[in-house]
Image 1: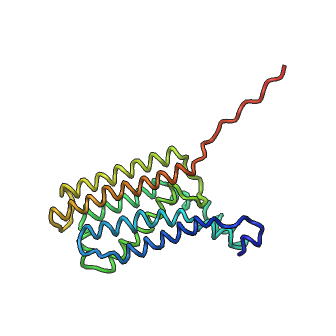
Image 2: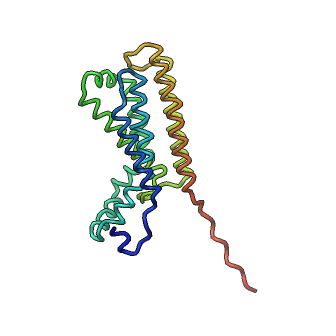
Image 3: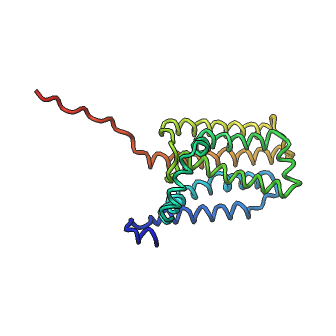
Length: 226
């Protein structure tokens, strides 16, 4: 491999295993039978939360940068430093895309429209995957990111995401304000999957962030000589 030829340390096989797990979860989400609302919710959990987290922890961007030639690598770094990339990579952007997508899907006629349009249904799935990947990467991704905010800020954004996820789950459970053609029992089952499954995914995301956290230490003042 190019990275070994360049004298760099070998690739961590745990990264490969994580990316493989993410690909398997992605395939499972796409193949999941979504004949009812709980099935759809399992798809969302796999495609929008669990699979993206595992893919992000595989660090595909780092591997790509280590294997690209210098010219392509420098171009990629310049792209990451672009102001648009900085805005797109911010955790708040990921939060708006993930949580905002859920509210748009369930509080508007969008979910009804996906039931009769396979193309729209596919676009919603694609949005879940990309938005979930962006959010997981902005919070705890090992790949290089342009000016990520500090860990306390990322934890705060993750806390807002937990609250937003729980709120939409509660609205579904109570059949309040949502535009979803489903019976009460089906709504409650789907809301339960969203609530507890989302908690699990967000706990895993928080653990991934905390495990990689290296708190900054204040520099010690130099000793004063008499």
